[in-house]
Length: 161
Ligand code: RP5
Image 1 (spheres, helix red, strand yellow):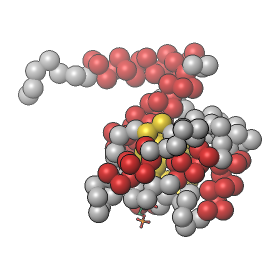
Image 2 (image 1 turned 120 degrees about the vertical axis):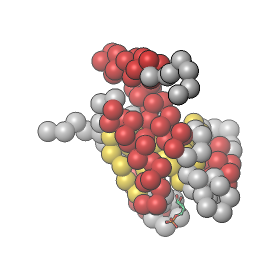
Image 3 (image 1 turned 180 degrees about the vertical axis):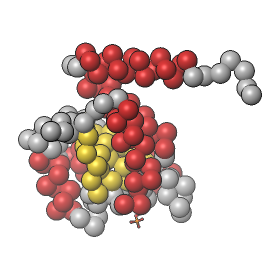
């Protein structure tokens, strides 16, 4: 049987998956059990409420939330759970993701969202940061994360080709 997910990846739209799949791929590479769901703060508010309030009880440890434009998903999620929420600003068409970034990063004091970079880099790093948080209490994962980082270091060329 597959392991129960400990990281929940949520996104405001299926159109965000192109970005958010990089968080899923990163967690997959590190052997971290995760799930991916479409949960929109604006279009499916009840689904968001149910997801955020049920997250602790279902055994999730970290939530990665990606959204674009008026990106309220990470902040609203964080308002309803004490789990660490990592926000990924999706690169929007109209404003290139600056709207997403500012919507996610400017949380009022009291409700934190750990905001990553816009787009693919942010999604990858959200996966790595979620793994890093979990590795604090999981030695086997800590070893896999160290090895992943070593492989990355070894893959960097000394000179351009
Ligand atoms: C946001 O609106 C989503 O997170 C997405 O980035 C953006 C556009 O959504 P679609 O119109 O492509 O469904 O809620």
